[in-house]
Length: 210
Length: 104
Image (cartoon, rainbow over all chains, first blue to last red; front, side, top):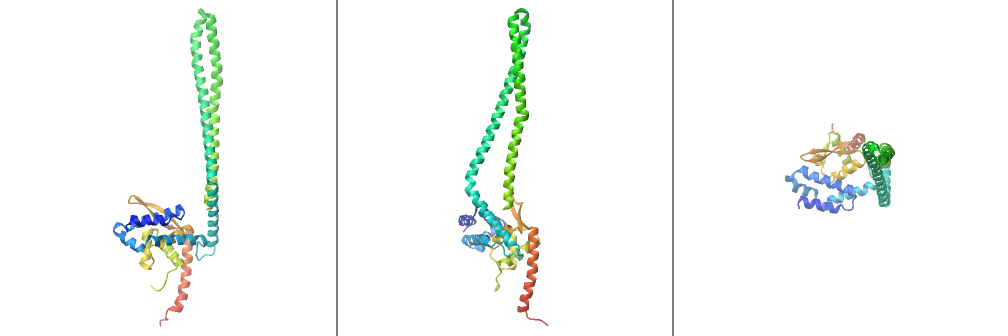
């Protein structure tokens, strides 16, 4: 048997274990082979026995660690360890039941927040563009309108009034988009950040409990 | 060997080897196998259990383009090791009193 065959069979035999436990064990034995060196490969395989034996020792110890995880001399170790495993099982069950629902909810919230952000940004940009256009028109109307007052006073005054109209748009739009960029969007981003921090903060606390 | 090494004793041996210095799985196995006759596959579950009990923690060190996983004792592991050493001394004395012939 080669190392590859050995590891592949071990992988399939550990299929009932939690994924992290599987990875941990496989990693250990991969490394074990690496450290033994290719020249000792056959020797290691012989010493380890069959993949079935190796898998059995891992599965046995995993099963017994759920019931009594420690035979240490200090008395207080066993109860805390058992409590921890109980909590872990509880958390795992909760995660399995609520996982898909929670996933949907989280995705919905994230997408909604992102859509609001894009909407706000687009609105602010649109208003800003209008204000800039109004400014250009203001100068254009003024430059053409003022000299025109002397030759064609009615059209000249019309252009000047249009320029003043543009000033109105410029002031309203400018301040509106400035407010959006300066206060509303950063405020919204901060709000999202806080929301995310709170969510992930609770998550890490849960992980600590494990 | 006529005497079997139990899981508590194996825990104690692993903790004692690690208290002398951090090491990685293969080396740890060889060190223990130099002294007691255990199968190469028994050490992984021991290490994993000690890890779960918070007595041992792994860390990675790059070695020849890969990561090699070393293990070290946590403060809790050091306590545990000291407790095992104490227990071993009393255990050994008791067995000695039964087993070993008094020499003049």
